[in-house]
Length: 329
Image 1: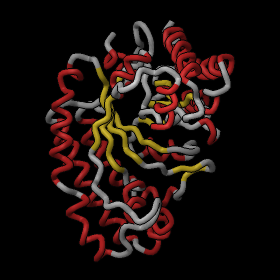
Image 2: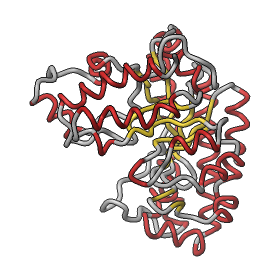
Image 3: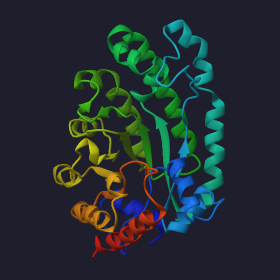
Image 4: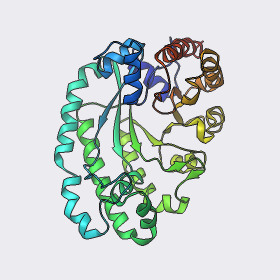
């Protein structure tokens, strides 16, 4: 099977002939990469060559993120009222972003068509985007203090995202659309179900209706404990979730039993990666039932931290291949 055939098979609950997909859903941290070069990783490789060096399948990312101006500090507000939003709105939703997306899709189309790569389309979600604009703390108050502006911003984002979907689908069909959200933390969602249903769900259902017409999956990207969130997503016609952080108490084996038609990506506890061979193997043993369940693509539950040596990552990759093959037998 090609890399793309494997990826599509698992997304659709079908068996792989040889092994499961072996992907990193996100690139390594820059400090991790710098350490590995100091420990013997050939210098100067780009991301694709690095994936090939380790024996990973390429999950290529195409992005259509709104161009939000930088805040004065991480998590700070970009706007404080509707008039300020109006001032930057055209810059945020520039047509140039869509043109760049189409050009990038054309560049990788032949590799995608041949099955060499799978593709994730990254778009901003309806929790993530207002947070980028309002700032982290003001965003949470905005659900109550600026509901009309919140609705307006998310309506604008929905139109922009639909434009991006129409544009990329005219060139190729990615394996899935990844909606950036980070709606949960280690104790669960950062908003109530009522707020989700009012501010987010209507936009999801409009997008997913079009995405499903094109036989593409939709997965939400959310850190933290997502147990409570998953039924809300299913109700909004979302197909899956990632990256399933173990530190937040996520139990992927429980999830695959409770939600057998839902797609899961990630799940491997990054915090065992610096603890040596026995711990790295034990984590794959923990994941093996889920890997055999049909709709789970194992991957790191976030980027590999810089505390992980090159030698330990190579051990991880050796076991990854072993268990990716074992899971289909």
